[in-house]
Amino acid sequence: MNVSANETARCGASAPVPEKKPSVGFKIVDCILIAGILLPLLGGIVIRVLTHPVESGISITGAVILAEFDFPLQKLQLTEAQVNSWLVMASISALCLFLAHGLNSGIRCRRHLIAEWIVEKTDSLVHENMGDFFRAFSPFVAAIMALSLFSSLQSLLGLFPPTSDFNVVFGWSLLVFIIITHYKLKGGLGYYLKGFTEPFLPFTPLNILGEVATPISMAFRHYGNVLSGSVVSALIAAGLASVSAAVFGKLPGVLGSIPFLQVGLPAVLSIYFDVFSGCLQAFIFAMLTMLNIAGGFPEDKWLERRERKAKRKQRTDAAREAGMYQSL
Image (cartoon, rainbow, N blue to C red; front, top):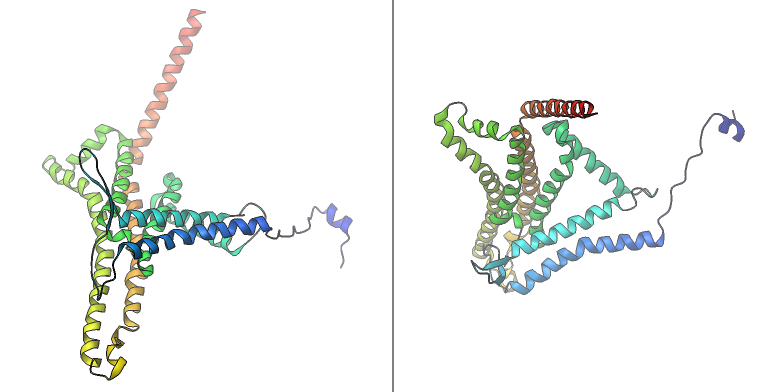
């Protein structure tokens, strides 16, 4: 049965709003954001080519020192890991802007669905592991996971991954440790210090050592797993090159110089150590961050302190009002 326009209006139904098409300005901004994603990575590749001489074979080295600055106490070194960290942060920032571009303008794109899916999954992960009180930590957890993941994936482009430098990962762990201590202190300084004497007073040195070891263990766990994967991949590639030269080196002509055993297998190992292991370590680091922050927060003690402060404020306000009434 057909329904007239007047009947539709009386029923309160509204016609579907047509989706807006991207304008020329919208597309230009998209191109600028895509360039913002790719240019930092290309800049890292250029820096890598200019600062690393051509070497024969496979070598395992740390982050290259790009520059040194003299200060009164000591020299400040600018390393390849630090530069790559800044580059990956610039790329992640541009990627976030690209995913959210036009989200509230009525223009619907597939990337908006991706952005909404990431936000929903992160909110759900934080809610399940930290509770309602820490719901605002979703952006922080997402930033940690993205920074760790994309830093590890830089090795796929031939760049030095910042997660293979202990100084970079320890900086992340130290920031997390400061946040953990901040929420532990919400129960009060006395309650925080009393926790070191649990369950008995002789355990105080061990508890202090365990508290200090938190950022160190988080950093070494992440750094060691990523670095060990890179070392194993390099050693296997070098071993395959030697075996290939011994087995196929006697072939005539150019065939003897082709490393047949290095074709395919190192790429498969790279997929595991760089992609799978990078995703896994990023997830583990984020999980440890959430569990340590939420686990160290004495919510019951904090609620008691807040109730006492509220009652004290009520008594103070009541006394002030009573004094003002008597003065009148």
